[in-house]
Image 1 (cartoon, one colour):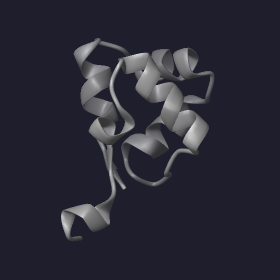
Image 2 (cartoon, helix red, strand yellow):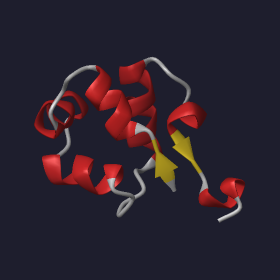
Image 3 (tube, one colour):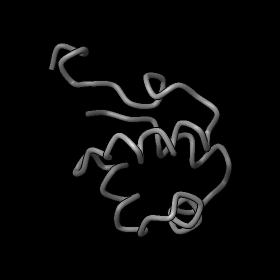
Image 4 (cartoon, one colour):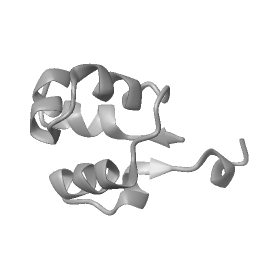
Length: 68
């Protein structure tokens, strides 16, 4: 799954540690999601979407939708 998390974080000038704090997860979790090594749970995806004020679909895109 691809995502725009790193871009959204950079727009706020937040570090991975700051985003992790806001989401109540570890910095390693944020890094793994940003790099596509870990797909977030649905509750975490909803927290991310609420934090950035965007629908989940605008942040996360399934690789199958991209034809990958």
